[in-house]
Image 1 (cartoon, rainbow, N blue to C red):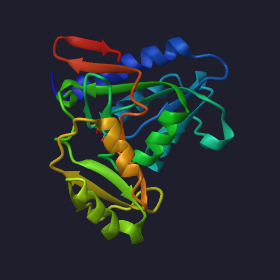
Image 2: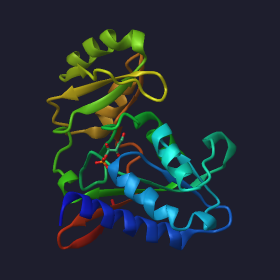
Image 3: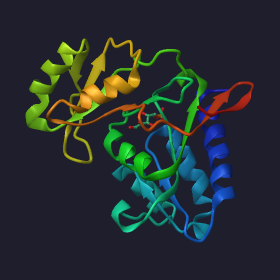
Image 4: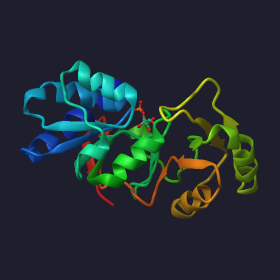
Length: 223
Ligand code: 5RP
């Protein structure tokens, strides 16, 4: 199976899970990236049954609307029943690195506002220790150099993501060469740097369920 076939398979499994939860008032949170795009395609098949969604990026909102799926502002809905999104890395505690697509801040907000967070990924994303994938940090543009200097003090190598402006009009620093032994602590420490909007560690609010696509089938992991 190709990586895309694995992604499609986990997206379908997430769709079946979401479909089993659907009630009149269900709001579905939808993530960003190629795996989430497969999930959007699945949702499109039942657009008439969906009360509504919230999207973690303008791009995902556009794709949802293309499938005639209603997209709401998070402020106009209550709790999000279930949030489905991909990840760049996950450990077996379901702590994640996200933000490869630059949507980490909105992803974090929707994850925080959701009753259940279902992560969907192919098995290349499962690692023993987080950090091989450069950790994205969204920063206020004028704080970029200052934040980068503070990150160096924490032991990371920050690199400015060229030609990337987030949906919130901010910039991204990708931190290379980290071996993240304590994800909760690093998430906290990065959040203390003035000028950081959000970082891509999802440790404090990790996933509740991981659907992992493997050549032997889909594995469901819980923390
Ligand atoms: C976007 C993300 C994505 O979930 C992450 O980059 C995984 O993407 P893909 O499903 O394309 O592998 O965090 O900001």
